[in-house]
Length: 289
Image 1 (spheres, rainbow, N blue to C red):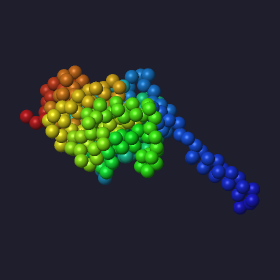
Image 2 (cartoon, rainbow, N blue to C red):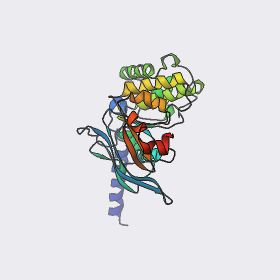
Image 3 (cartoon, rainbow, N blue to C red):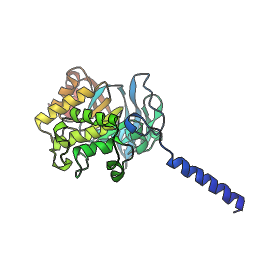
Image 4 (cartoon, helix red, strand yellow):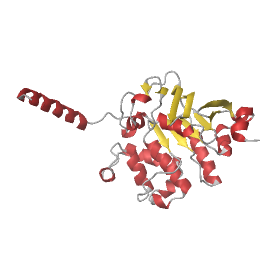
């Protein structure tokens, strides 16, 4: 290799490293952006079109198509193996579909983004089992989630702005943990840990929340309060709730919101809960007689 090529390569490498350390563009409350903000001018937050996923010949998703409107609270139900978790895996980039289309708003092709980029674009996911920093306090968990740099040591030593303090106070009230600010997260009840993780997601200012069986293991009182929390988020965020607890689904839908039933990797039925419950195919494959 000639000295000229070596020098050119060194300059290119230096420019690349400089771009890497440059301050990232940020959105609300320090959330870094991987690209453009999603455009919702058509009123749709999420497009899932003819999505197919196979695992060793088993079709986990078989032409799945649905849309979720901006600010909508949508419940997804269906038997085990219907494709609910696989759908969420595809939306968040954990699983790559064999074919189909996934769009966040009208301008972001989710199938071209990595998992971190999808999260940074404004999609948050909560798994069934709560994932919190159990050795840290409730406040510290939220504080870490609020900041762009996730390194624990760097974040806990940095100072919050007045705007961030206000945001944390708002979140603590919203998730019913205002009286548990200094409590170690590992000492919280199961339901309180679920609320804390929801608060950690909200701290990142997501536009779309994917919630996988969020009330599993909760007491009746915790379940009811979680429903109230989700209803308060409707309109400010788009929410997709995967759930088996039909009492909870009834609380969320209140006889007017749309429910989607999945079966064998595609939409079996969609509509108001009462209509879905009266659907013969849904009764046969999921609700039972």
